[in-house]
Length: 120
Image (cartoon, rainbow, N blue to C red):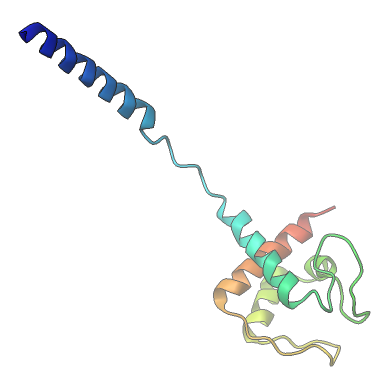
């Protein structure tokens, strides 16, 4: 009787070891923080700015006076744009409304503009 209990215990331990080995978490996938910020920036631009500006890598702006974001990203140093977003935008077209962005939103917009700058 002792032998069958020992065999059952050994089988149970073996199964538990196999189960824990298979379910052990592997290394956490590395998160691309910059890509996530750029995606949030793209969503922010699409939600707030796309009524006047072309916010993607192609296309024309719905409002002729509003330059496409890709042109803005290529023509202006991003650190100056970041400062402008933080201090309040001043533009050459009077139809541009005033926007107040949180610091995290500005970071996201800058990450997105950087992706547009990199587009061919």
